Amino acid sequence: MMAAVRQSPGESFLGRMASSSRARAREARKREPEGALLARALATPAPPPLRLGEFGMIAELKYRSPAAGSLAAQDFDGDAQVRAYGAGGAAAVSVLTEPEEFRGSLDDLRTAAGPLTAYRIPAMRKDFLTDPYQVLEARAAGAGGVLVIVTMLSDAEVGELLACAAQCGLFVLLEGFDEADLERIGGIGAPPGGSAPDDSPLLLCGVNCRDLRNLAVNRDRFRQLAPHLPPHLPAVAESGIEGADHIAAVASLGYRAALVGSALMRAADATQELAAMAAAGAQALGSRPCS
Image (cartoon, rainbow, N blue to C red; front, side, top):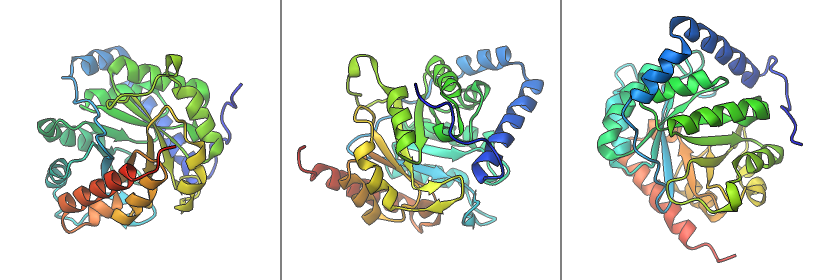
């Protein structure tokens, strides 16, 4: 049997974010009952499906990072950034909705999801989700996917989030930090009969090289954990990626996609930078020897 959860929310960054998320969900329920939100979510037009292509780039819209501080000037145009990601061939656009440390909101997600439909690209809610109610919020805001951080959740909590995402037709990026997390994700994400995913996966396995318990970055974690990636789920390298050379490195390890935020937010030409990263990933993935 899998462990329930390997740390209790305490004074760590991840613990604080989990506690804050639960409080936000409680307050949101007071404003709108879950039944009403469910009806509104399911009445929202279906989002575009996730298509990874040769190598999938999940480009991120975030205005602030707790590690790097502000990532956007006062006159930053979020709509233009989202459209730049669409023109650059993003597979999806991750939108931070956490308000305290990342200065995000559901309005940011809603605003991004609109123009992305013209590019047939889904938006993904990136937050510290703890409650299925928050998955419904994502769907009602136009999202096509959500992030689920397994480290801070029990198996039962992850299961509830996955069931709600399936009800809403959303893809899920299951994020972990170490071998134990990947073992849990592999068990959670195993499809019936062990069939391989197609190019429109509903579950992905993410490896975050920034440990959100202490915000430390260790890019070597991508290499260390590559042998433990669940073979039936597309693997996504997350955080610490600053250019096409980093993309090529993770693709050569077998990662099928990458989530990049700060580097693209700071890029002089986000469209060009994103396209270069995707091309580097596709080339490196295509040159891997057959196993």
